[in-house]
Length: 129
Image (cartoon, rainbow, N blue to C red):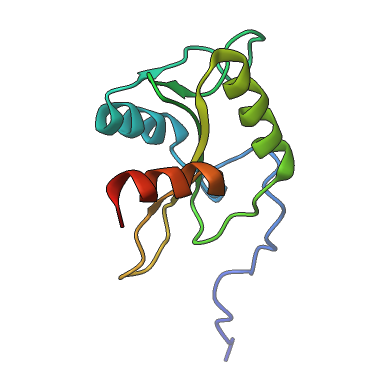
């Protein structure tokens, strides 16, 4: 009597071409649009790939850099802070980094704002808190 061994097992190969198994990246465009809508500021077209286009979102007071990740954590990079600070100083705005953690777990908010401590202190004193 012959034994049925089922279908042969196919080895899994690396997905070099980005098929459906590839994890998707965070939706940075949606993040930028959400920031612009919430803040009333304007997105900077070509901000990440064209010189002379500072920040991702530009308002009257702040120049924002947007960072998004599919994970629940992100590494903060000094070069991001240096870049947005230099650009903000050049156009007379306060630098601000907005971070979206798409996999943040309740009760943690998905969106966070990072500003220089001196500017935060000025906002606190302005509110009298």
